[in-house]
Image 1 (tube, rainbow, N blue to C red):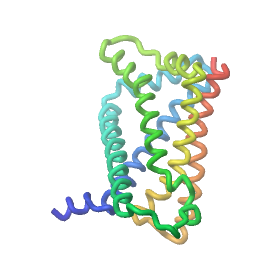
Image 2: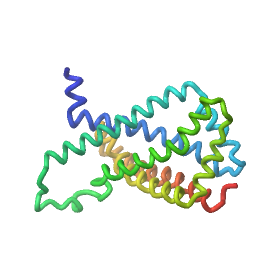
Image 3: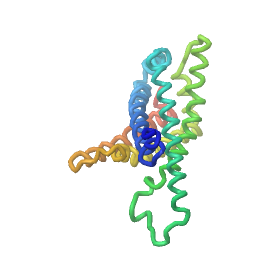
Image 4: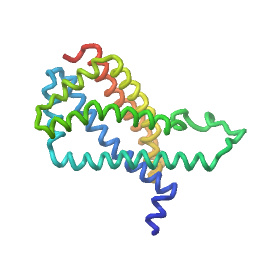
Length: 221
């Protein structure tokens, strides 16, 4: 009973959001590392090898289930917490100036998260699902071909870049906030965590965006 009360409390939800967020961050590191092999310009050989391993290894398949569960839990808990917070303050304080107390992106986590969720649905429908269908039917995969064909289209490439910008701002607040929600605050280490969060929020989404633009402008053959 105590465990159930903790999970349904605002503190419990923040902890779940923090843990699932850090899990998703670890996935981003792996994902951007694999995607970056596209920049090797070896006609997608390294990328296809890595993608084939990810789509056929049973350990990765199990982790993938955990990834989907973590993503769903992260989104649902965040939305529930947002709705509860809004319900607690149905009338805005006249004298309250949010801009004076926080950055715009920290006040816009729900909007940024929604944009990222829409992007993920698009991304999964373009890459994840076709790959699963190919594996199920025993067909030869060409993940590099799918990526190149999609991101050579200016509409999709720009949409991806905008999504990565939204991801960067989401991480800019979420990275450090996750540690804070877990109670990991320390006068010595918190500034380091903040600095790492800023670096991660710029480098990882920036690399994703760079890959999309490199393909769009024909720098990847």
